[in-house]
Image 1: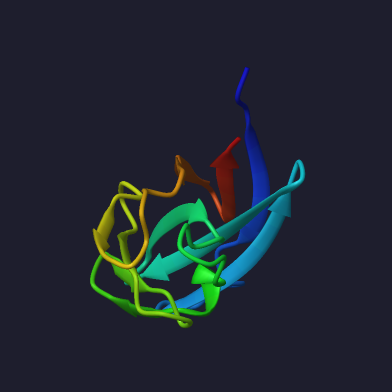
Image 2: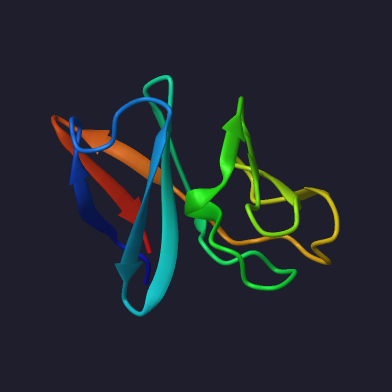
Length: 102
């Protein structure tokens, strides 16, 4: 059964930045977009590019390797060459703790 795991404190990830996390063997990218946190798989479904290093615009991230775009809120692929979506994880803030449900 999924449970929430503390992954950061509120000040660890400034607005406009991202952080690579490894939780239970999964590589997860955590993004802070204007104080709202999003978490998706870090690995692009095209060639495995690190989404945590991608350019973020609004609720979208672009893979730094080949330009595939994903929705941060849903993990849905918005533009190729990625063939499928990435997993998306629920994020909550409890006090100063940022937690991801995995």
